[in-house]
Image (cartoon, rainbow, N blue to C red; front, side):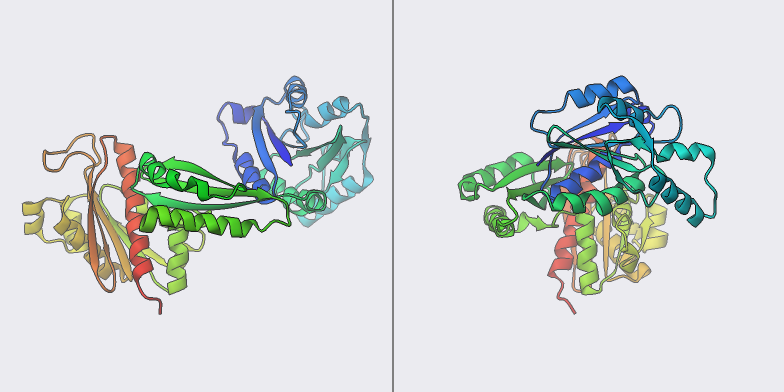
Length: 415
C-alpha cells in the first residue's frame, strides 16, 4: 500500500513549529508495510486542501491529513472535506456525548463552541478521539482511504495507534521490515567501495540505503513483501553480507541511534558511564541523556574547557598540561581516568580537541581531537584529524567518542 501525508497549517510553513507528525507517521507506517511516497505541507485554506487532494499520485491508496480540525473559524479542513465529498454536515450525538465525557474527566464543562466539534460530514466514518475533542474522520473515495486527523501530536498518535492501524491490519497483506546499522569514522565513498562487490549477494526483497551524518554513516536495510514472507531471514542474510564486507567497523544499533545502543549495552551489563569534555562542550553527555531511562547508567559529566578546571576537577597534572598541551594523548588519558574516579563510574569517556576555526598548529591542525575511554580493565586513546569546519568537527568528535565507548563496553565481559 502506498500512502501520502498532508500536513495542514500556516504555522508549519512559516517555521513557527516543526512538523514532527510526518516523521512519526513515516516510521509507523513503514513498520506496518505502508510505503509513504510523498509528504506535502500546505496552507490552512480550502483552495490548498482541494489542490492537494486533486494532485495525489494515481497509485496512492491511503492519505493521512493532519491539522485544521479546531473549533475556530480559521480551521477549515472539516467543512472543505464535506464540500469536496458532496456531503452535508451533521451533528453526531455520539460524538457530542464523547466530548462531554472527556470534559467531565478533566473536571470541566464544554462550552457552546465545542459543539462544533460534534459536527462532521455525513459520509465519513468517525474515529473517536480519546485524547481531545476533534474526532478523526475516514473517507472512502474511488478506492482510496482519506483520513483527517487532528494536528496535536499526542491526539494524532492515539488515533493512529488505537483506531486506524487495527483497521488497516485487517485490510492489507504487505509488510516492510527495516534494520539500521552504522559505521563511525569511515567516509560514505569508502563504504560503498567495500560493499558494492557484494551487492549481487543481496536477495531481491532487500534494498540498502546510505544515510550519512557528520562522522557517521547509517546503513538501512529495507525488505518488502507479503506477510507470509520470511523477511527477517532476508534481513539477517544481508547483515551477514555487510559484516563480511566491513568487518569490525560495522556496528549493530538495530534501528536506533548509537546513543540508544550504548544505553542498551550498559543496562544489559549493569554498567555506569560519565564524561569529561573539552571541545564538545557537553555534547557527549547530552547525547547519552537524550535516551529515556538513561538515569539507570549515566552518572554525570564534567565540562572542563580551561586548564584550571582540568586540573582542579579532574586531577590533570599541571606540568603535563604545560609540556604536552591540552590536546594530547597524555592529557585526555588523565581526563578519562580522573572522571572515572571522581564520578565513580565503570566507564568514563573524555575528549580534548581543536574544533576551530582558529587554534591549530602545524603538528596539531584544526580538527585534531584526542578521545579516551577509561574502564575497569584498561584506558584507550585514539587520535583523529577531522576537518576545518567547527560544527562538523564537534559533531564528528561526539560520534567518534560514542563509537569508542561502544567498542570498549562490548569488549568488557558481562557479569
